[in-house]
Length: 494
Ligand SMILES: Cc1cc2nc3c(=O)[nH]c(=O)nc-3n(C[C@H](O)[C@H](O)[C@H](O)COP(=O)(O)OP(=O)(O)OC[C@H]3O[C@@H](n4cnc5c(N)ncnc54)[C@H](O)[C@@H]3O)c2cc1C
Ligand code: FES
Image (spheres, rainbow, N blue to C red):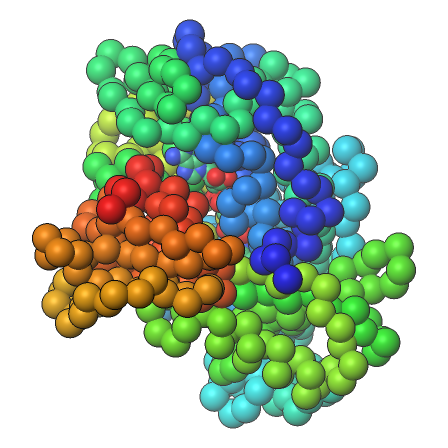
């Protein structure tokens, strides 16, 4: 089965219309996910000339593979924030997300995007999870959310209670993105797909270079999840968290809410209404990209778990995606480098970008249009809040250093035959250069194993048949082409 998300399968990419990348725009936005499209729409509505450049097609990135709960109850995210920040930061975070959720609800209502209202749950498998969920309940209530505790849950496996927040939203993220793109276009935004940004120069204006041309802009918004520009060093302050989703047809009653576990095993559940009844969406089995057990075993663990608790469930779609988790547990939204407002970035949503990406777009548009949003300070890049993540930065970079060294010193023996179908390996070539070779669909390709971002050694992902970098999460196809950044250039041909 091809690894395509349920949403991307429902809304296949249109054939790309070749559009030139040239001329001038007030603002160039890079990235056709929720952050980029919504920023472009807000700026287009305000009368700015905007061009959005997307490397592949709208929804190619994480938004098109999201579980798409638009929820203010976010697992134990408030606890993560409260561990590092003062109580008023938690409150501002909730206010930001509440405004974002209301914006999505209004937009979907105005533009006929289907939305379901469901209770959200942060549930516990056992006593540790119960303690964590209880803590989240306290924080949620302190921040003004009308959350309650529920001891018994209507789930086919043992649980130890849950926080519940009623009236949250879930949707099909590709339907939302296409509506955003349509509205943006109606407000004069030019959306150019198939335009990967390779380089940016900031002089008196910003010069944006792509594979298919160059254009200039007064301002640039980089909404590529992890910024593709290294100058701000965001890659060193967040780790790439990859996780897995599988949709199932099942004869059991539809799951009655949006669930996320507070303890291991990490599991996310929601329903997806279809013309033929309801699908069950099961997510989880996350890990840092390019590290740990083989990716195929992550899908297997979700399949086994579902077969045990939802016997007879029939798989319809399986896919995987990644989001970035910043050390300071808050999104980063603002200037790429301190005190230079020409280039803005946004990302680091810790798997809660369906609201945080919207909040980021509101904050970015306000910044560009000269407005002021009080809560935006908690997400601001280079603010004092980011400093609170310093010990975690050290841990992240310690792990990155270890992975870097391990990739280069691992004994890599030359081999005479190509790898078997669906497998890949890294070995030294006759000149001593690390070479990645994989056989996919009967074709063996050999490329450099050195990541073009900052020199990590890539690892073969046996589920998606890609080369994944364990340092900052760049991913490449078997022939070396970029699948996702922060890298912008493919692996060199060996
Ligand atoms: C498995 C999973 C489940 C999730 N579930 C939820 C959920 O239930 N609720 C929730 O709130 N959040 C969820 N999230 C998080 C949420 O989906 C993301 O935070 C959000 O979609 C990120 O949006 P974005 O616009 O910043 O990035 P993306 O959607 O990744 O968009 C970035 C775009 O930039 C493009 N791009 C990259 N490099 C370049 C370049 N060089 N030039 C031009 N374009 C480029 C990419 O092709 C991509 O289309 C989940 C995340 C994961 C991984
Ligand atoms: S992603 Fe940074 S070195 Fe590979």
